[in-house]
Length: 300
Image (cartoon, rainbow, N blue to C red; front, side):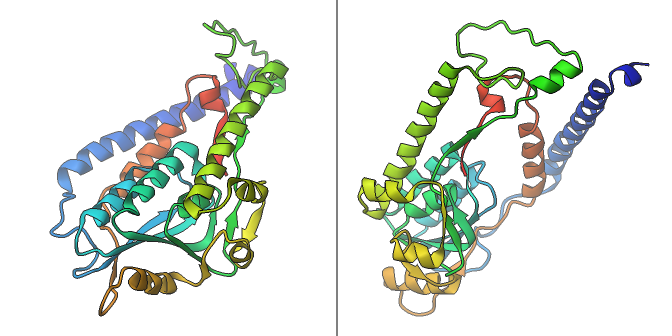
């Protein structure tokens, strides 16, 4: 009877139950696997005698931990003379992008660090790339998209149709800003727009500073549009055209490496996939209706 009267709520209950069971199963699997699998290796890299470290950044930038760890490992190894960031990402979170940017700026004091752009290195991907000493991209690489977007889903009309009435008890005027169960007030729109403008200015300023460009010149290019690698070279958003091998050659030249250039990658944790799956499930479960859960403010 309940399923017939409230099909939407019944569906939500089923989905929530399934996600909960999956999450518990993954947590148990991670705990069990961590006892069976060793994550200690005789060496940190995919091959011995490497002199150029390659750090890959693929997909959405949701966390900075692994990337920063890999950069630090290469920076502290005397055998590694230069570092390449291989970026294939459309962007991601502001916080993680800024953390990686900061780590790159620190690394530049000790070693040359170069970006090699893949098919796309836009928005947060470009934010990170801008911190490097040089940027190499393919003519058809999609880059740029310098900007910040904040969005949320409003399900107020759906809630009315199925008889849901929100009840909110809050400690401050803006505590429930971005609630999906009501429209934004004009004062709230202005507050969020000010936040987006502030974050955008941070992006533009950091990129301009790292690239040695005038902030006003960078701001003109930072209207959210994307550029091809060829166009980005003309606009001085990148330094040269080429693929990963060209970036390796450039790294060798800049670091004055004599002899054979040997790129190496960090070894992956054997249970990395399981951990990522658990993290993804955990991030997908939101339990409150505030701006921090329902609004997405990302460099994208």
